[in-house]
Image (cartoon, rainbow, N blue to C red; front, top):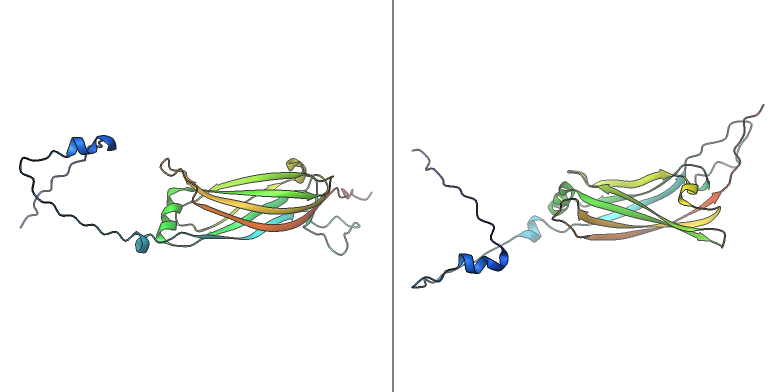
Length: 200
């Protein structure tokens, strides 16, 4: 037996404030109507959550060329003003269906790293870094490489913390921030270190 053909049409998009007038016309003899609905969004989509860990502020300068040396060792947490340093944090999401949907739709994940100096000779500044989520990925590192002098950091002792905003979506229909978090603090020193000229 052949399947019956199905008629498919597209509904007209009627403005919400005109909906009842356009659609509902009371018949001459009104018949009773019954309706009921069920949704399972809590079970199907579930909640969405994330955690922050491993806030990092670390210099990249290696050991100086011999015969120069640093005792007891070159510290990645004492950073030269013109030394590249990594600044970043890990963001890990749960794997609920709702989170998978939000990752697939393209969600902005924005971290703001705040540098607070101790003492009058230090400065205070913020560094913002943003990434977009991608389908099937639930763990991100949000960070960048930057020189302290490019941030306007002067020599001194600093405390660094980060705040994170999840959202809005890159899609035009998702205009809301739906997650916040913070992590801190990392302590570091910015210093004008020797340039270790090569021996003659």
